[in-house]
Image 1 (cartoon, helix red, strand yellow):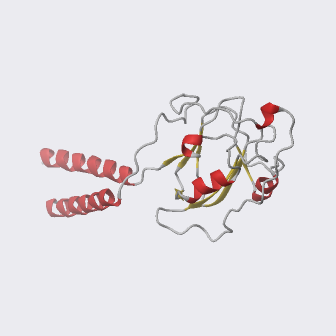
Image 2 (cartoon, helix red, strand yellow; image 1 turned 90 degrees about the vertical axis):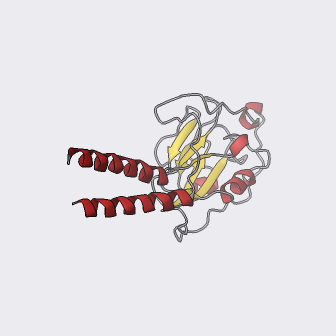
Length: 205
């Protein structure tokens, strides 16, 4: 009987691990290889990047930038459209690279508050779904108005800057590399395994 209980406990642990793997979050490196910087094509570069992704509650955005050259601030849509820090949602993250966990479904807006970087296109609007495959909430799709050309005469305000390596550790939430995304076949296998284990336990007791 003790041996049987040991087997049941081991199967339970394996099932828990498999279920955890099926709900693993995805790490999205903002802008992929351009990182979080002033994009050459203006705000359209981040719009195009975001349009190719599916964001789900629990996913992580990694903003790759050099500390003291850029930052990240979560703002309202109005502040996003105006490139304003008037209505921040939390504090600016000034240490790069920065990881932001998407904790709620809906539209999320991020800007860089350094100089005129936001006006030059360093801003991101995304829509987050509550679960994989679910349609995003019925909020307005994030759009970006035409971005005015920066008029700063200070080169530091508008010059692109290099991105830092994602391997740099700058805090407890920074991850060295994004985990691989899981496939739906793995989820089917995990569900099948849990069902099989439940039937086995029911026959044993």
